[in-house]
Image 1: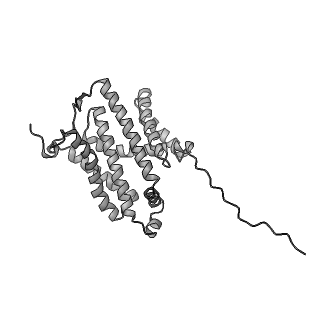
Image 2: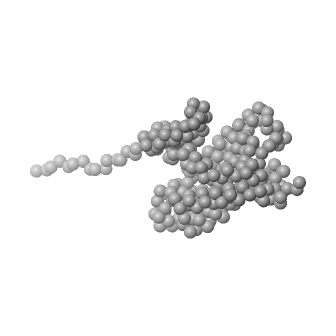
Image 3: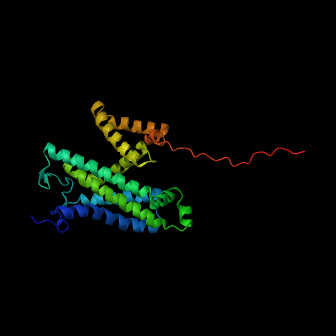
Length: 259
C-alpha cells in the first residue's frame, strides 16, 4: 500500500526530526500571526485555540486522512533500529526525555532572563503600557507562541514511542486543560513550577487510580482546589520567595533648632 504524499520523507530520521519542529512551528506562526495581528489575547485566544484543536480532532477521526481514524496509529515496533519493546530502549527513551526536558528548560531560562524575556513579561503583565512604550507586542507574543509549539512538538515525538499509540483523541481540550492544571499546581511564577506540577499531577493519577479507581478524578480535582485556594502561587511559591527590596531612607536628619 502506497503512503499518502504527506508521509513522504518521514522514513528518514533527520527529516522526521526537522518536521517535529517545523510542522508545529509553522502552524503556530500562521495562526499566531493572524490572532495577534487582530489583538486576540486572553480568554478569547484560549477559546479560539481550543476550537482549532477540536476541529483538527474531528478531521483526523476521518479515515480519508489515512491516519487510522478512530484507532489512530499503533503497532510501533522499532525506532532508529532499536526494538521499542525492550527495557533498554525504553530506558533510553526515558533518558532522552529527561535530556530534552533539561534542554528545554535551559532554552526557556535563557529567553526569560534576556531582554526579550523581560519584554515578554511586561507584555503579559501590562500589555497596553508596553505597547505605549513603543514595543511591538505582537512580535513578542508570536515568538513565544511559536517556541512553545515547537517544544510541544518535541514532547509529542518523545511521548508516542513510549506509549505505543497516538489517536485523534489526543487533540481533546481536556489535555490542554490538564497542562493548565500542571502550571497552576506547580506555580506560575517560575519555570520549574510547571515541571513540579506535571510530575505531581501524573504521580497523583497513578496513586489515586490504584486507591480509588472509581473516584480518582474527584480526589485529584479536590487536591487541585485545595492547592489553588491555600497556595495561590502553587508549590513553587513555597520554594521561591522573592526577596523584598529594601527601601533606602533618604530622609535628611532633623536639624537641631538654633536659638
